[in-house]
Length: 359
Ligand SMILES: *Cc1c(COP(=O)(O)O)cnc(C)c1O
Image 1 (cartoon, rainbow, N blue to C red):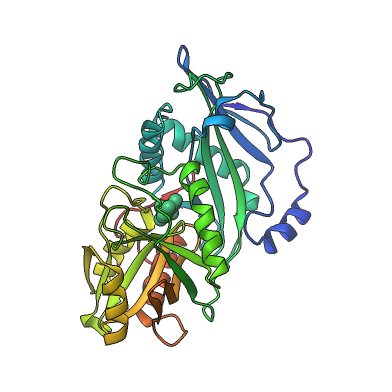
Image 2: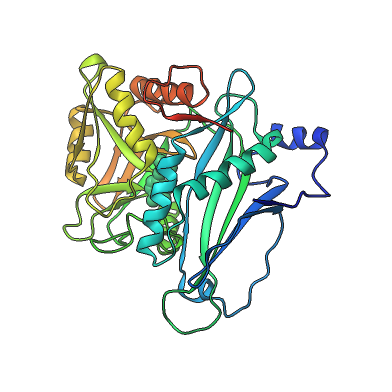
């Protein structure tokens, strides 16, 4: 990899202060990695360069037809001060799948992982120190052929940026959700399984509708029968049925329209490790309402890399409002959350070989 260090890197003392009060996505590290692809030459050698603006011709394909994909992953500080990644090869695989769906080039897994390791190693000082904090990594790829003709781009640019992320979990504030019966996120054959900006662009109006209903997030239902629960905003959903060690932890089945979350997949294993039954199910709006009313559904939470786990309290839809629990995160929600964080930060044994040290 070509390396061009940033002559204006933030001095360590100032950087530590920024990291200590980083919020989410407020500050970016000193460097980024770029890697160009063309149909004729394939992938070029990646370059680590100072973080900064990029210049693109206004006729660049991505600006017009939205050919873009991204990933979200984190680097976690370990008890001995070293840094680890959580299932990075799963992100590499998903990035390649998303690329294929958007007619972008598939980046080889080892090239993708090389960029991740190199940036984290270079900007290691930006990885926060406490459990629940991390360095959020955002690899993405854009179509860079210049011209307004509608066709798969014959050029693409991969960029990797990183931003320190604080612990923004507030256990006293469960998420409220608006179940959208008006808008559709994804249909069979569409891009629901791909992590692409276009999915988000099409979802923002529903997010606005949720906010107008006083809700934090939107929950999507399926496109055909308009009743099966799929996922929430940029996170997958989990429902706890029953209590204590007899509880079953269930999540909507991957039907081809949901984004297959790595956190979702990990929780299926972690919940089993903790002694719970798990299931991937078709769960309807009626099942949600009736389950909460009868007390069968005891806890609901959303999961994803950014927040790990966020408890869901109130659900609102055109059919009414249902409240789960007592406004506090459920016991099983918190147990799974703490276990996930423990594995990621190296305080709980990694029995699944999910954690990779930065080389
Ligand atoms: C990224 C994402 C998720 C969560 O995936 P993780 O791999 O767990 O971070 C869920 N839904 C959507 C729509 C997403 O974009």
